[in-house]
Amino acid sequence: MERIIIIVHTYFQLIVAVNLKMTQFINDKVDIIVSNHSVDSLKIYNNLKNMNLFNDVFYYTSPEKIKGDLISKFVNIYKMLFSKNDLKEKVNLKDNKYDKFFFYNITQETYQLYDYFRKKNENIKICRFEEGFISYLHFNNMVSKKYLFIRKLLNRKIFFDTDYTYIFYPELLLYNTNSKIMKISPINKKNKELVKNLNSIFDYKEVVDEYKPKYIFFEESFFCDGFEIDDLKLVLNIADVVGKENLLVKLHPRNKIDRFKEYGIQTNKTIGIPWEIIQMNNDFSNKVFLTISSGSVLASKLYFNEEIKTYLLFNCTDKMSNAVTKEYHKYLSNIQEKFGVDNFYIPENKNELLELLRKRNNK
Image (cartoon, rainbow, N blue to C red; front, side):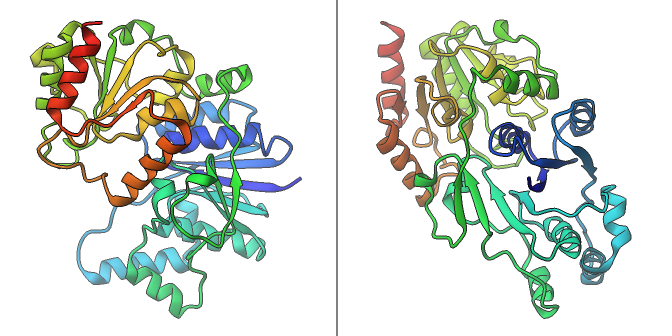
């Protein structure tokens, strides 16, 4: 039996962590750290505390991003490298000895936790686990060069690679790594215990009525991130073809403004429940999913092995989504090659999209 610690910053990471605990690590002693990066994270933490799923549950308060002069930033780096009290203020860890440390986000906080755990066990293994399609494109180190430079001077470990990489589809990985690749067991909707636990964590309640329309458009974070893209205009064009009564926009969780309501476009009312939990509990086989570049629509095939008609619309806007890179294109190509293209469409432009929808709507 191994002793494992996992830190999660997003709800998808938590879903993967729960799946890992209930499959590969069912006989291991697993602790989890929930950070305050997500909406209602404290509620999720308390829900986990009241369950017997993980051995121990901790809450991590991530510091505010340091703004100001270089001295302030270096003081922050110093605290993260040397101050035990700094870590204690953020997470009330116990003096446990762990065999493996799991994470996705490689940040200064990740390094700080690693340094803490390594003092208890210098042979601890570092393990990265999947966070959607971005996990397959590149290694994605999120730490400043200043911080890495100081770590190097201090002869502290830098994560140029990890000991293990846990992902659902090792064959889709696009970058080279010396990490040992481990395949994650699929998320099985028929696993009633898994579904029950995830529903309890996220306080899931039936949302069938919200998703009655045939066409569901997945909004992305462009608007709340200040990235100008004509997604609203595209949604209105789609509504003109399929009918407003047949279209629902699933709002992005971080977007606090409903831009679609004034145009008579329906939007979801339940906020804070991850899409994967909603899809796990409902049958969307007769729906059509549309998005510009969101990875949420890929969950149907990648995580639930469901055949749902899906349109990726990054060629249909005046400005290209910043998520669409050459690696993203390669990743989609590999998905099509692996799973087929019968229910997976990438229109070359808006006119082609609208014509496809007209034909489908007239059937």
